[in-house]
Image 1: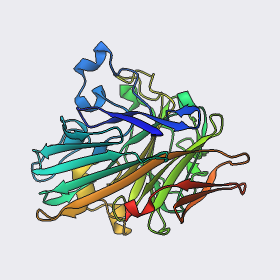
Image 2 (image 1 turned 45 degrees about the horizontal axis):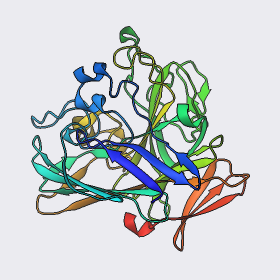
Image 3 (image 1 turned 180 degrees about the horizontal axis):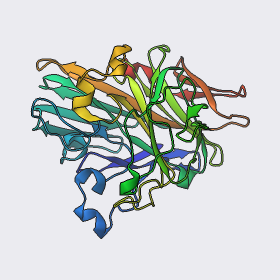
Length: 354
């Protein structure tokens, strides 16, 4: 197998993950610097295990709805999962939800001769509206600077409420609530423009934006080219399941515990159906994104199984491949095309997303 992965029992957090590209070992994901240290014992489960990617239901934190009080990013990111089967290439785990009764089944699998990781979350017995999403975090300290791109944007906005409070030792650089059309031109609080296609950037700040993509085929994508390590990481989603993408730029802007100024060079690429990270109440209530036709929650039916598929993968860079311009389906997989004209044909089961 070209992919090896681990998952924490608490929170079902995926990581570390190792991809093999020929003789090279690629580890794209981040693990928080306090993980495994004595200081982590006093943290909530989500933060104690913070790493890789994890599934959130509800996505975010904040006031609940109709008396429901969920932990930050939900029970799925904090409670203990029950492992029902493990093999070298596949893991299946279950979680009984208590705050909003129901069951979630998590399936993580790798496939022979591929450098992809397929994830499925299946909801059963859940009733009512819920926001949810993945929370992948990439490590730019280990892998060097990266060039970021996504499917063509339809809507994009900086978080419309304050993300960090300087009085508490938290700092943000982007202009609160600003709408933008291109990742290269995002308004900053000081009147300048930030280029979100390049990272790490804006050291000493934490920022959050949300993106919604124009329909392309039946999947949307995000990608990061790590030129120094000569690989590209990508995620694929079906917009019918995961409507938007939240980008969390964490580069030393939190000086309070446990972050303490040391959480740097991390980019969250978080594919969601939610209203930013503002939690269940905000996602279910009226909001500007709903007004523009973007779903920020999904209505679950107790008698219906709901499947949320998701794929992440890596591929080696050929000479001349710069930033990803597009990803499209081809026979047997996908084709990643760069702005410079280079291309990668990559084996992947795109039918998984349907």
